[in-house]
Length: 79
Image (cartoon, rainbow, N blue to C red; front, side):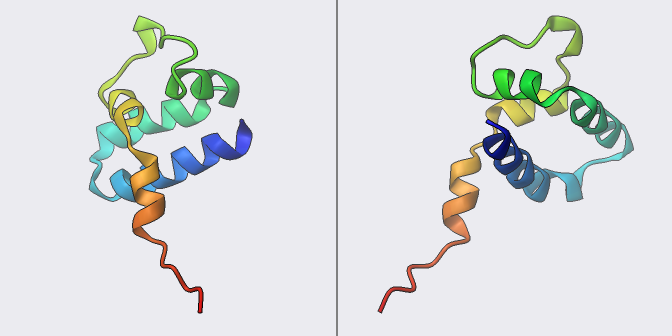
């Protein structure tokens, strides 16, 4: 699960962090400070996000289509 979360978080950061304002970056930092198993459970849909932790950046993360970001950057280089 660790590698999967890093893949999701990495593609999310690449797609979203450059456009975030200071308040959104603070919210993103809160997510990064949360234990990985909890964040993985939320993004994988295994557990709901506690209402007191839900924020606009976390909503974006939950809706993030990481697979499209992975495939968009790859080329078929077979001979």
